[in-house]
Image 1 (cartoon, rainbow, N blue to C red):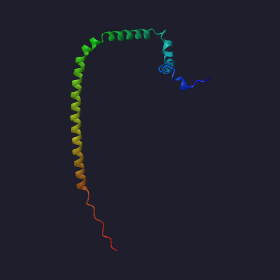
Image 2 (image 1 turned 120 degrees about the vertical axis):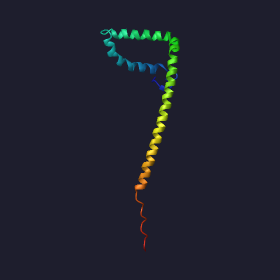
Image 3 (image 1 turned 180 degrees about the horizontal axis):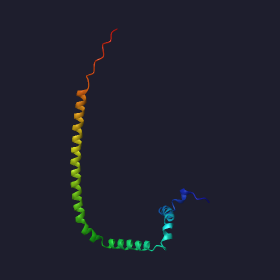
Image 4 (image 1 turned 90 degrees about the vertical axis):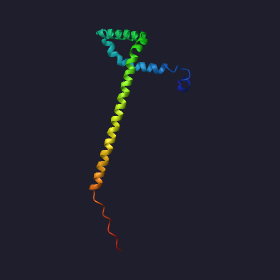
Length: 123
């Protein structure tokens, strides 16, 4: 019996094949790093420190939110002020560019010679 993908897809777990393929693609990238781990224990120590810091941050997330929320709100207010300032400066630059363009266009129309009408055709 051959594997027919249309009949086998119904009985497969949708996650397993793609996840296994992704894990298989990551292994060749990790192999060189895994060779150096026994020679360089700083990698293991760094991974352990990151793990401990992640666990501590997860356990204290409510406290972190309470202490950082005023800073985040202040940053939002300052950001909005900067956005408004940039908007007004941009509008001023656009108005300045329009005025300059109109001045150049007016100068160009004044400096051009009037078009001479073609001579009448004689038959």
